Amino acid sequence: MEQATELNYTLRTDLAHEDVSRRKPEELPDVQKEELDIGGVRVQKTVIGETAAEKLKKRPGTYFLLELEPGDYHDSKTCRKIELALSEVLEHMLKNLNLKGKRALVVGLGNVNVTPDSLGPYVLDNIIVTRHLFELGTVSEGYTEVCGMSPGVMGTTGIETYDIISAVHGQVDVDFLIVIDALAAASIARVNRSIQVTDAGISPGSGVGNKRKEISSQTMGVPVIAIGVPTVVDAVTITSDTIDFLLKYLNQEAFGEKRPAEMLAAEPLKRNFAEMELPKEDLREQWMGKIGLLTEPEKRSLIKEVLSPQGYNMMVTPKEVDADVEDLAKLIATSIDITLHDSYRNTYLSEKHI
Image (cartoon, rainbow, N blue to C red; front, side):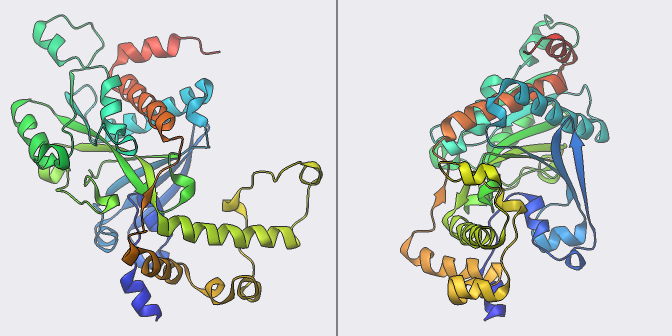
């Protein structure tokens, strides 16, 4: 059963950190992991080598994951902190690739008519483009040559996204691409609460099972920096996570110390499930029967086996996705602007934020 389960279940995530974290270190000998603190924002850095890339079915390269708390980007002060952290990550990548001050094409992937998939086009609406000003000779000092495009999706254009970008890139002389897209996560906790940045490029639609031709340095001929936010998660993940949350909750209620605030609270307080432990095996069986004893791959495979034939393994997004995507798009656009344009960065840093 266990062997069949491993073969039948494929983790659905675009986040390298999630994929790597679910493997044993000996399976991925050429992966390097490091946790950073950039201006108060926790960042997971994952470097994937050739061997690990083949096993994970991802491109080798460096992946940064900025971890956000719920609502962080709706608060102006915290949003500024994230913008600067994301800008520092982008700055690091540009310097490593020797791209600082070079000409950029910013591509907003996704469908503007589908909110969870509209992150890329929204970012494009908010960035500073300057290529036309360079051609007119009217650009101010301290600005880099930047152009942008939103190619739409194959379902509305009938054209492969890669083909559109490649055609434009063939006509516009740029040194690198910055590509923004919505992603899929393998954890409820990461939906709209993570930003991934990588120099490995991107495969549009891969997280939701619509894999298209990848956009990377190998296919485009110039460096590609990809920025993504997981905006959806599948029903298998939601169900699996909920089972774990229930077990952790019951374990905490049965054996955890109750704080005075919890005893006085009119309703249950928010809990950090990531820091809570699962109960021991005998208790898991007592509370959940045989389901409580399943390994993570076995549990997800079973849920998939139940949901998929009925068409119930849907991709789900939070009800606040409209506000989340809008604010995240502005945050990412600002980070790109202050990274690419020194004059804008100086203005941004001189502004007072109360």
